Amino acid sequence: MSKNRQYRLAHRPVGAAKETDWDLVTELVPNPSDGEFVVQIQHLSLDPAMRGWMNAGRSYVPPVEIGAVMRAYGTGAVVASRHPDFPVGELVTGEFGVQEYALSDGHGVRHIDRRLQVPASAYLGVLGLTGLTAYFGLLDVGQFQAGQTVVVTGAAGAVGSTVGQIAKLHGGRVIGIAGGTDKCRYLVDELGFDAAIDYKTENIRQALRTHAPEGADVFFDNVGGDILDDGLLRLAHGARVVICGAVSQYNSQTGAHGPRNYLALLIARARMEGFVVNDYEDRFGEASEALAQWLADGRLINVEDIDHDSILAFPETLTQLFAGKNTGKLILDLGSAP
Ligand SMILES: NC(=O)c1ccc[n+]([C@@H]2O[C@H](COP(=O)([O-])OP(=O)(O)OC[C@H]3O[C@@H](n4cnc5c(N)ncnc54)[C@H](OP(=O)(O)O)[C@@H]3O)[C@@H](O)[C@H]2O)c1
Image 1 (tube, helix red, strand yellow):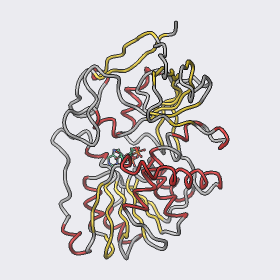
Image 2: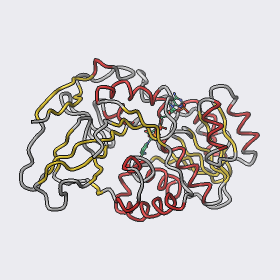
Image 3: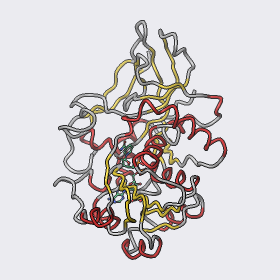
Image 4: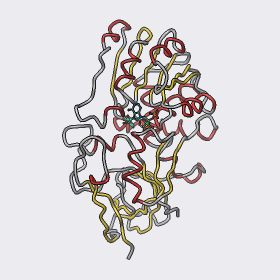
C-alpha cells in the first residue's frame, strides 16, 4: 500500500510562512468509495494567495483550518477510480491540496485535454486560473480596448506576464514593472512588451513619465504598496485600476499599506476595482477557448518556472514567490509523471 505525504497547517504564520508552520504527515493512500477516485499529483501550483489562506479571518475563501491539508491547485493522473467520468489514466486538474495523492468526488475537477498537446502544467498557467485571472482582469474589469496603454505590475510573474501578452495581442501598448534587469529584458525581448521598468533600480515615477507620457488606461496591479502609489500618479483620463492582488503586502505584520495617492482617481476620473476570478466561473468556457487558441497559434507563451523535486521542497518553494525568484508560473513537479 502506497504512502501519502502531505503538508498540514500547524500554525498561523507571523510574517512570512516558515518551515515550522507546517506538519509533514504520512498516511496511507485512501481507497475510493462509489463516486470517488484517487489522483496521484504531479504538479503543485504555488500561489501568493496561499499566504492569505493561512490567516484566520474573513476573506474571499475560508481560511485553511489548523491541522488541515494545505489548499493548493494541482494536476495529476487518476490511479484508482469508482467514478464513471474519471477512469484510471485520466489526466486531471483541481484543488487537490499539498499532498502526493488526493481523494476526490470530481467536484471542481477539470479533465486535461490531451488533444491540445500541451504539457499538463499549462493547466496551472495560461490554461488555468492564471490565464483566466489575466483574461477577466484585463478585458472585463479593466475594460481594455485596442490602442490603449496598459501598465502591469508583477509583470514577469504568472498573471502579469499573461496580462501583458493578452494586451499586446489585442493591439495595446504594454509597460511592465518587475524586479531585476533579466526579468525586464525577458519581458521586452521575448514577450514583446513595449517597455519594462525595474522597480529595484529605477525611479518608477520618472520611468512611467518616459514610457507612458499620456498615462495608463489600465493599471493592472498584482503588487500593491509603493508601486501602486507610484502608478496612481500616472493615470490617463477615465483609467481603470485593476486590483488583482498585493503580493508586497501579504507578509506584512501590521496590515496592508493602503494607497496614499488615491485622490489621483478623482483627478483622472478613474476607478479602482478589485475582483476574484472565481466570480467568473460561468464564463470560464469562453475564456478557456480563447486562451487555448492563442496558445495553439503561438500568440501566447505559457511562461512557467518548474522546480523538479519531492513534496518535501514545498515550504521552501513557496518562499520563492515572495523573493521574486520565479519568472512566470511557479510549479513544484513531484516527479510522478504518468
Ligand atoms: N484576484 C484574483 O482572482 C487572483 C487570482 C490569481 C492571482 N491573484 C494575484 O495576482 C498576483 C500575482 O500572482 P501570480 O500567481 O502571478 O504570482 P507571481 O507574480 O508569479 O509571483 C509573485 C511575484 O511577485 C513579485 N513580488 C514579490 N514580492 C514583491 C514585493 N515586495 N514587491 C514587488 N513585487 C514583489 C515577484 O516578482 P519580482 O521579481 O518582479 O519582484 C514574484 O515573482 C498576486 O497578488 C496574487 O495574489 C489574484
